[in-house]
Image 1 (tube, one colour):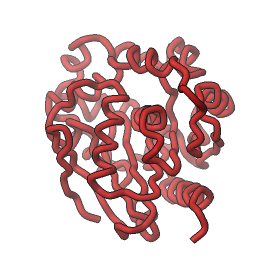
Image 2 (tube, one colour):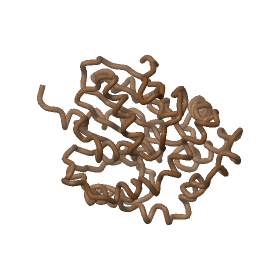
Image 3 (cartoon, rainbow, N blue to C red):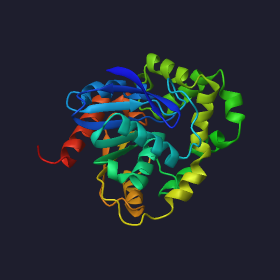
Image 4 (cartoon, rainbow, N blue to C red):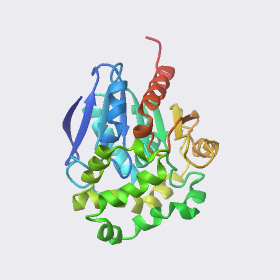
Length: 286
């Protein structure tokens, strides 16, 4: 695996890349409060038979420069730029958490570049059961992160402790998020612009919901796999039904065993196997 940089729209996007460049591809998009390191244990398993690229989202980790906006349509356009610069073929975009929201925007705005898509452990703004999710008091951080400036003031200098709260509460076994990984994630949001970028993803939720509420002109036929960790609360069927109602015509759901919210950290082998199987299912013979 190598780390390199892609220039797109004036930004420098750091990527982890592995696997044969002519092979069917994966674009792996992380969520909050993580970086591309979330897929460290997944990339090697997929790269045996696939070209795998995992970027640090704009302004996070080793990526430099602040995007013009933080809505998921803007981020999806930037990720299309990364995919095209890397020459990704027969592409499956797989996103976790915020990364899954970006994958949904890719499906809506850029389906022609995708052979398939996977959305993991996330609710999509404006798509059922979104309204139930944002009313859930246990999801308090959505509202807190959207407050202007205050989260940066309180969390700056305390990233490690703040992020640990979520890793401990949302994972099935807190030890599955290693000390090394926690250190990497805290460092990825150490710069002021990085910390703000992460909170700005939440501040863009109203704009995302408004965009997603508009029905696509025609059903989107790209095959989609929706995944949740086995210890994640909620009925996966509600999420799959919501995606179908939002215009995704070919969606299936599945569970990653022995995982809470952070499936790539908690059960990377099972996740890699499921993603590889999905790619085989949707790939043409030969």
